[in-house]
Length: 492
Image 1 (cartoon, rainbow, N blue to C red):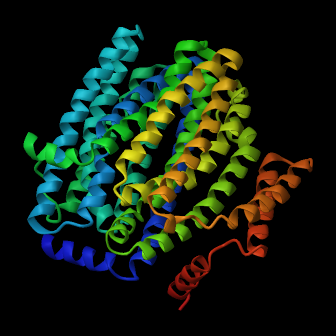
Image 2 (image 1 turned 90 degrees about the vertical axis):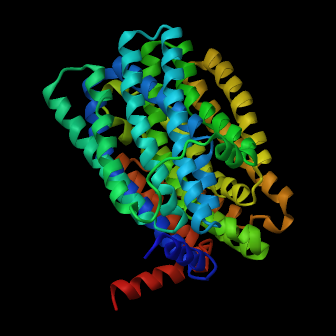
Image 3 (image 1 turned 60 degrees about the vertical axis):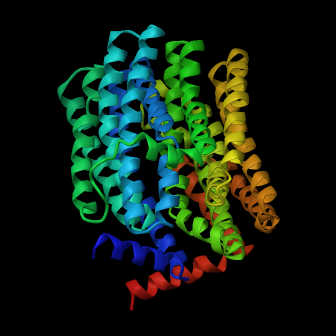
């Protein structure tokens, strides 16, 4: 199939009722793939943190968070914008956009790495950390090329390939980290360099998959870049603000707290970040549908957002419950030295649960093209949220930082909901599910009063929650329809 034929097929699919089930299956594949990679990552990360200890772990996470800031900041919102625009363009216009996106992201990532390395030098992080930023930054440039090529796969509702690349990355990273743990001492640079060969291999695999479907040569035309960014500048700045806030908590703590405290907090943040990817993976698959419905059919958009909200709210509450109850077990994996991280992880689990709903409403605003509203929300998160972290760190150390991040995550979700309803009152979410989930969580929490091992406590609490939401009929009928379809496929 040529590129125009592929574009037409994707466009036709987005205009049909099959788009919803396809998005559900795609989101499921991405979540399953991520979970498989997560299991590998947990093993390798646990071994790595045990190998490095709290102090070196804190420094390791400072480097990775600095480069993560570059990754989010230099994305300029282009990934989300690209998915939205490629889902509504065809032919030459689509190819031209794909080449421009690749060129823009290469340039911005190179500049971003140079800036963050200068920051590391300026604040006196030391030679090792500065070199580490350079190593991980070079890998970021390679990863940026790869992730830009996946935009067309997401726009064409082919997320299974993206899940495969994520799995490949996790597998290679885990193998190399475990090998280094066995062969070298507790030194930062070898472990920070792991991302370079991993990113190169995944990029090569991605190129083979998209060859013939999307242009592989970048375009470096400032005029076309500006044409892409001009209408989306508010969203670009919004993405930058969100990145600074989400990754900046560890940097703030590194400047205000001791080395051990930084290690404890960075572990809890890292654990939450591993799971924070889930709502984005699942919901981003629906963005092409939201975008097309926002353009053509607001009733369809309202229906899609309502069902997605209900499922995300149910899953978010379950994840928050599991993290809060299972925090002692999760931290134990990383060794007894990290025991002080347990309450920090339990606190931040509530913010993680809220992010599932936030992802739905943020993608709804993005589908509507409400970039200015997203900018306002993210600027408030950056300014108010960062100030709250600073104040609570000074009052209560890293416990205060955990409370600040969780509380402000909930506030941001509420702001997203308000902005969405203000954009169109037809998009009011079905809030009747909220008391049902609250009752289910309350019943599940009662199981924690039993004196049982942590793993059994997580299983019991989760089982009671699931049973309660089923009895209360909180699960949308569409979920059961899709499950029956899957059963017919697997068991004809």
